[in-house]
Length: 151
Image (cartoon, rainbow, N blue to C red; front, side, top):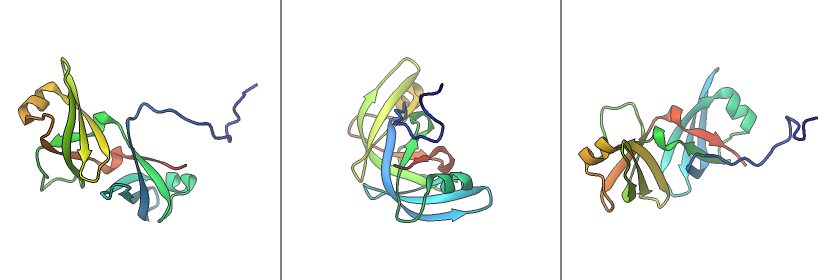
């Protein structure tokens, strides 16, 4: 017999390091997908694209609390804001740590609002962009790469 009925909620640990709390500013729902505009607790605004079913099932509404979840591998970095790009979530910050690797590097940014965001980028890209502690960078995240959590 299952000790955890399917309708009972369980605490969940996640491997996703980027868990950014915020407040829902607006929800634009269509028949299949919804755009959810969020003001992070640090002040930045981002948009997440999730299914309309997820909005209903999670009880997402303007004024409600959510956490934006982003895998480090879904975060691209640039040395400045990028124009002429469909990615609207562009979060400026300062590099606070770099963990180099043979092929990949983990780069942690302190966003201008104070929250940290980690990106996994190739070592080649890190070197080419000159990403180093104390330098400026902009995190780029597609709306479809941002999952939402409520609790």
